[in-house]
Image (cartoon, rainbow, N blue to C red):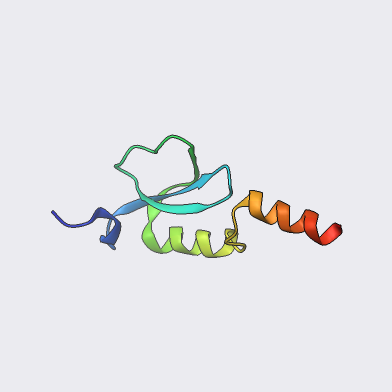
Length: 73
Protein backbone atom coordinates (compact mmCIF):
# COMPACT_ATOMS: atom_id res chain seq x y z
CA UNK A 1 0.00 0.00 0.00
CA UNK A 2 1.32 3.42 -0.92
CA UNK A 3 1.20 6.41 1.38
CA UNK A 4 -2.03 8.39 0.70
CA UNK A 5 -0.26 11.63 1.63
CA UNK A 6 2.10 11.17 -1.33
CA UNK A 7 -0.60 10.72 -3.99
CA UNK A 8 -0.35 13.83 -6.17
CA UNK A 9 -3.63 12.93 -7.93
CA UNK A 10 -5.72 12.45 -4.77
CA UNK A 11 -8.23 14.87 -3.28
CA UNK A 12 -7.15 16.58 -0.06
CA UNK A 13 -8.47 18.83 2.68
CA UNK A 14 -6.65 21.47 4.66
CA UNK A 15 -7.14 21.04 8.38
CA UNK A 16 -6.42 23.54 11.16
CA UNK A 17 -6.16 22.86 14.89
CA UNK A 18 -6.76 25.20 17.83
CA UNK A 19 -3.09 26.22 17.76
CA UNK A 20 -3.47 27.45 14.17
CA UNK A 21 -1.33 24.64 12.76
CA UNK A 22 -2.31 23.45 9.28
CA UNK A 23 -2.28 19.96 7.79
CA UNK A 24 -2.69 18.54 4.31
CA UNK A 25 -5.14 15.64 4.79
CA UNK A 26 -6.45 12.99 2.37
CA UNK A 27 -10.18 13.62 1.95
CA UNK A 28 -11.14 9.95 2.36
CA UNK A 29 -9.64 9.72 5.87
CA UNK A 30 -11.77 10.85 8.81
CA UNK A 31 -10.82 14.24 10.25
CA UNK A 32 -9.10 13.60 13.59
CA UNK A 33 -10.41 15.04 16.85
CA UNK A 34 -9.17 18.56 17.52
CA UNK A 35 -8.94 19.50 13.83
CA UNK A 36 -11.36 21.50 11.66
CA UNK A 37 -11.64 21.68 7.88
CA UNK A 38 -10.23 25.01 6.67
CA UNK A 39 -10.41 24.20 2.96
CA UNK A 40 -12.87 21.72 1.48
CA UNK A 41 -11.77 18.81 -0.70
CA UNK A 42 -9.71 19.91 -3.69
CA UNK A 43 -6.46 19.03 -5.43
CA UNK A 44 -3.10 18.88 -3.70
CA UNK A 45 -1.75 22.02 -5.40
CA UNK A 46 -4.68 24.16 -4.24
CA UNK A 47 -4.29 22.85 -0.69
CA UNK A 48 -0.56 23.57 -0.70
CA UNK A 49 -1.19 27.11 -1.96
CA UNK A 50 -3.81 27.66 0.74
CA UNK A 51 -1.42 26.48 3.46
CA UNK A 52 1.42 28.66 2.16
CA UNK A 53 -0.84 31.73 2.04
CA UNK A 54 -2.54 31.21 5.41
CA UNK A 55 0.02 29.58 7.70
CA UNK A 56 2.69 32.25 7.73
CA UNK A 57 3.78 31.88 11.37
CA UNK A 58 4.78 28.29 12.09
CA UNK A 59 4.68 28.81 15.85
CA UNK A 60 1.67 27.42 17.71
CA UNK A 61 -0.70 30.24 18.75
CA UNK A 62 0.07 29.67 22.43
CA UNK A 63 3.80 30.18 21.83
CA UNK A 64 3.23 33.25 19.64
CA UNK A 65 1.02 34.75 22.38
CA UNK A 66 3.70 34.06 25.00
CA UNK A 67 6.32 35.71 22.79
CA UNK A 68 4.05 38.75 22.32
CA UNK A 69 3.45 39.04 26.07
CA UNK A 70 7.20 38.83 26.73
CA UNK A 71 7.88 41.57 24.19
CA UNK A 72 5.37 43.89 25.89
CA UNK A 73 6.97 43.37 29.32
